[in-house]
Length: 134
Image (cartoon, rainbow, N blue to C red; front, side):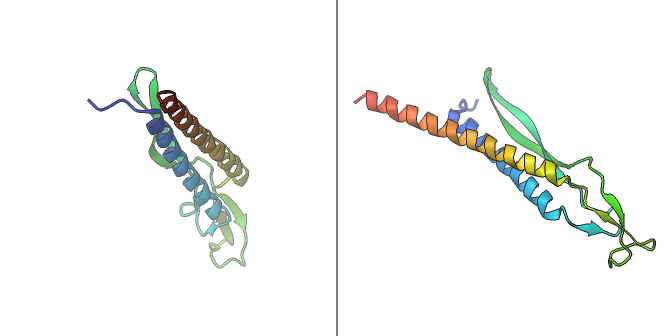
């Protein structure tokens, strides 16, 4: 049996999951303006899927179990001058909702910062406890 998770393990794993989430947001934002010559090859936003990891009753954290494509569909646009246009003059814009990605980025940053604060508080409490023993 493994040792129970400490507050540092729990917050660290949560921070790692938020880093994956931020990486997917960055990838989505980087590809938001891309176009493709077909709907099938158009970029679709990536989304991490989080899974709970329980160690003991009342002690759990999170991990990213997989990264999936979102259901946001690419948008067809008539642009016959584009070199990627099909025979009908259409291109497909990436299936990325930029506004939703910005909101997700802000939420990810706040969740990450919350876990940093948890770690700082746990560190300070540990140091205070050690000082009491002196």
